Amino acid sequence: MAISMNRERRTRTRRPFAFFRADAQRGARDHERPILEFEDVYKFFGEEQAALRGLNLKIERGEFVFLTGPSGAGKSTMLRLITRELGVDSGRILFAGKDISRLTDRSIPYLRRNLGIVFQDFRIIPHWSVAENVAISLEVMDYSPRLIRSRVSEVLERVGLEGRGGERAGRLSGGEQQRVAIARAIVTEPALILADEPTGNLDPALAVDILTLFEEIHETGATVLFATHDHGMIERGNHRILSLEKGRVYDVRKGLSSWSASGVHTVREQGLRVVAG
Ligand SMILES: Nc1ncnc2c1ncn2[C@@H]1O[C@H](COP(=O)(O)OP(=O)(O)O)[C@@H](O)[C@H]1O
Ligand SMILES: [Mg+2]
Image 1 (cartoon, protein in one colour):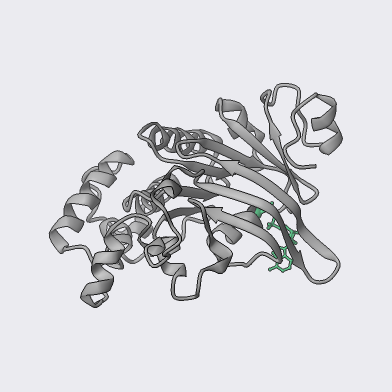
Image 2 (tube, rainbow, N blue to C red):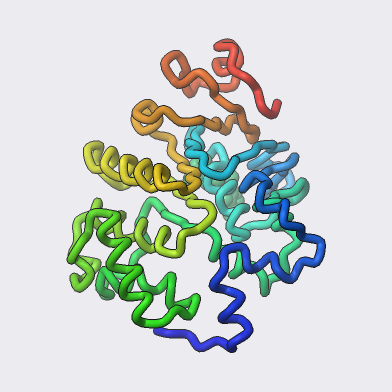
């Protein structure tokens, strides 16, 4: 599974934000920039259909942010723009101050090494062991086998799967498989963790456990952007909430007690601050 790389690339990939290093414009101060900024971002699917219509937002390092909005609101699209699976049609997305729409195809893997991504459907390899599923994140960065073993066992302990590394991943329960996926996402200590409906395939009690795990990871200093349309999840946490409605994003400042998903008007009537309108 190990992928051989030349020495120059090896040293570059070990440091966070290594993909910025080629950029002569970049100064030390950029590390103090918000981890993520959207500036008037538009994304169209076909001529008529705008998924995102002028999105503006800022996420600071160390925040835990829920991204909500009804199904089809554009949550996954937003996350796929951050990973550069999709490109913006206009506007800019800055990751740690760097405009990611200007990254070359060769630089995109470096961006992704600074992101930890967790999906609704886990996306683990069922016939690999738990440890192999987690180790792959480090193997593509060409860490030594010894370091990989110790990092994998540390992270499995962190997600509640201590001593389970040798088991076949496909044999684990849904909640445990999602823990494997979370371990794979965090083992590289990414600058930003993106979770796209990570509790969507789990029954409510397990979903709460997974949310709690994300909160624990956040407590240790990680920045988390957690997309969910499940109000049950959002109501449990005391976190900042970004709501996507009709292609725009609103900061819901006062929690969800009187908020409903019925639309932008509701958000406005409750006197909540509109970040982009
Ligand atoms: N690849 C695509 N091609 C065409 N339309 C798409 C594509 N991806 C998403 N959309 C549309 O963009 C809108 C937002 O979708 P999505 O980001 O998946 O929303 P959410 O994750 O909030 O449910 C929807 O109307 C969806 O149909
Ligand atoms: Mg989605």
